[in-house]
Image 1 (tube, rainbow, N blue to C red):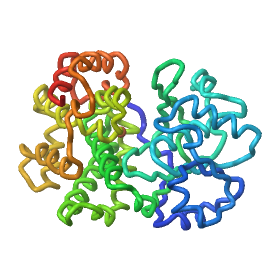
Image 2: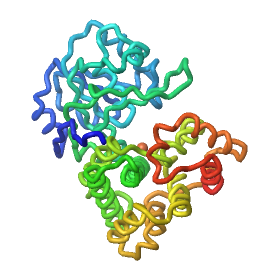
Image 3: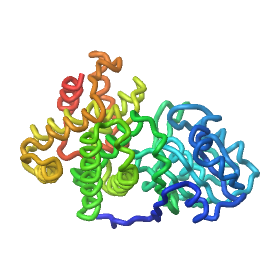
Image 4: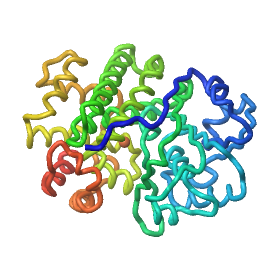
Length: 373
Ligand SMILES: [Fe+2]
């Protein structure tokens, strides 16, 4: 069994000014972010840092072409630390930038992944409460020419520090809050059920799950809408804990099955996970009714105030109150695609499937897709 460790330091702040002061940001530091994050939260601080807007290099999920263009633009520029302020795309790109030597491009990095070393310091400021990626050492990048999504992984890609800044969440639109917190909840559940978890990683899964469910419940009871903002610091912390947990134990079938849906039909990550979550859990219950799943039910029942036997159903209801769940068909998925997706998942997502609570066959996966369709 590998050792459980937390490599990245964690600091909590209420606002960006406090964070900038604590890290003594200078002209030697490079901020990678989006303009819509920078303008309201950072620009008025008149920091001396160089600033790079990711959207200048393209939109959507990170690609090798996007990263290569950024690396080309930074050629010859001297900077010490990278301060990544954003969601999953920004964080994935920054982790790669931190290990790229002068003149190197994405293909070079994949070619000598085992020998990567940290070239720049890395501070990550997550601006959603979902990815948890600030605590992991993997970047998933689309390699456009090769038509594959591939993870670049290295111990050198852990951030030195992550700064959890409550105020950075305050401008999140409700839908982004909802789907990112759903993603974090699923990270907590999948890492909890993973056969590759350990008692310490499960402690982080449990804590993340309890925080998210408690705060969802309170926000719903307070009338929904912006009520979640009272718990922004808690959601941010829970997402981070879930990141620690899945960084060790991995995510599993929900993430694996949601990949083709997300990439072919451009459904946002947290939402595509929600489309499949309940049906994956039902398949687990059907195939292996006795096991760690029962401990999960007990844990959820304690927070939601119900019998363990009703716990998962109550969780689905709460999640669907936070964000109304659709069917796959409502996102343009066709019946004919389902067997193609099932085959694709088995061919390309073994990295995740090995963390399943119980083994899922082609027929099982197809059945989950049909139920969610
Ligand atoms: Fe996720």
